[in-house]
Length: 83
Image 1 (cartoon, one colour):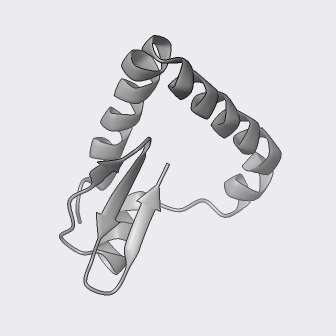
Image 2: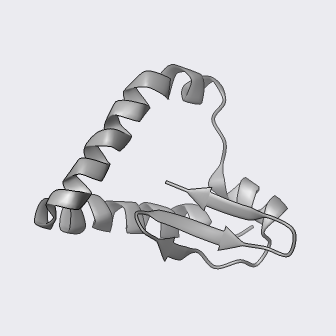
């Protein structure tokens, strides 16, 4: 099993703590993401997933690359885009 979850958590923490406060554009993106989370959080909690399981299944061996404020994992047949 990969350790995608730890890498993703570290990248997310860096984005929230270091990038967002220093950029008005990123503050807007973060605010929209929080609004989207508030709208959909109940559904997401009912259908939680483990990012390690998803990347292992659909993009085995892929290393996440930053794409804007998201992380993109590219496999042979699939792409996993996490935010």
